[in-house]
Amino acid sequence: MRILLEQEIWRAVGGGYTTFLTGMARGTDLIAGEIVLRLRERERDLRLICALPYPDFEARWSADWQKRYRRVLAAADLSRCICPCFSYGAYQARNVWMIDHSSLVIAVFNGEPGGTKNTLLYAQQQGIPQVVIKGQ
Image 1 (cartoon, rainbow, N blue to C red):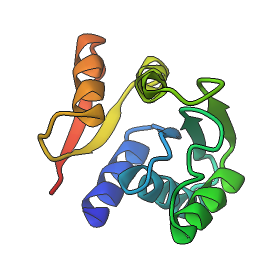
Image 2: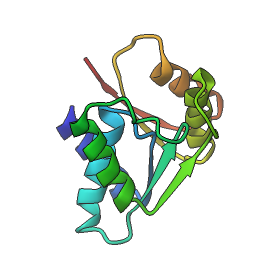
Image 3: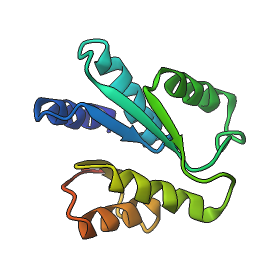
Image 4: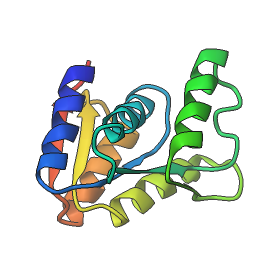
């Protein structure tokens, strides 16, 4: 999955995209952020924006994921906290904010109901093109 994700990010860069958003969730979101930061070493005009659902939403993660989260957040060009405090709706608000500020979606999706599916449906409703990598 990581290789396919990196290929699609490179394809987007080749298509003129220079700003990337990540929702900063464990897994694909953080991996995508790490990929963009690594690619930025070669492509200096790349920008990374971190969209956080609420402050300290990583607080209950393992130490390893927290370290990765903080590394990506510290290296990002901008971070935006969408909601002032925890709520289950904060995740959807973050996803809507990201789509509302996007012109292309690159997603890893396993077909299951949940946040990724809702985000892809919203992007489709908004007419935002999507690249979907089949997840497991």
